[in-house]
Image 1 (cartoon, rainbow, N blue to C red):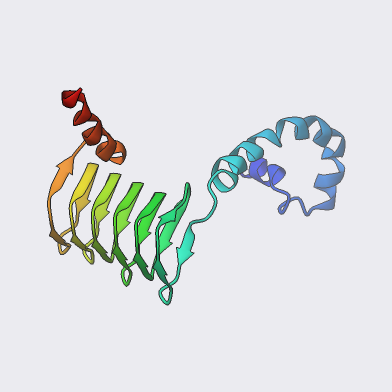
Image 2 (tube, one colour):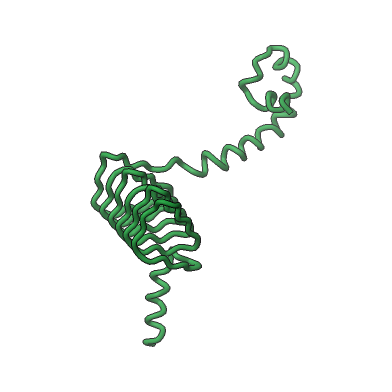
Length: 168
């Protein structure tokens, strides 16, 4: 197992004899060797870029929208929409948060809508939470209502869609 890992990795191939002998074999093996590392590399680093970070000295007044991940350490006065959102321990968000995965370590004043919502022990949330799954750690402060929905990300349009249906 270890010899296979060393053969596949360029770093451990420092021995001159190992490089000289497999040179003829490398062309045959290299055809089969590159696809697994390429698949592994493309799955993790290339597909998922690093989270956008908003530092603790940053104050944003306005809405944020991203298809990627956002890490908030500063203050945001506006709505945030992202794939994954992490509110840092010293961060404050005043507005609606909508994301697939939400982790709140800091303060949120406004509605929280997410498929997976987690309030850690240092979280302070003042507002309603609409979720598919939720976890609230001991010590978290929460004032508001909690509502489970199968599709919390599109919860508001469903409600507005339900209102016109009876009118029609």
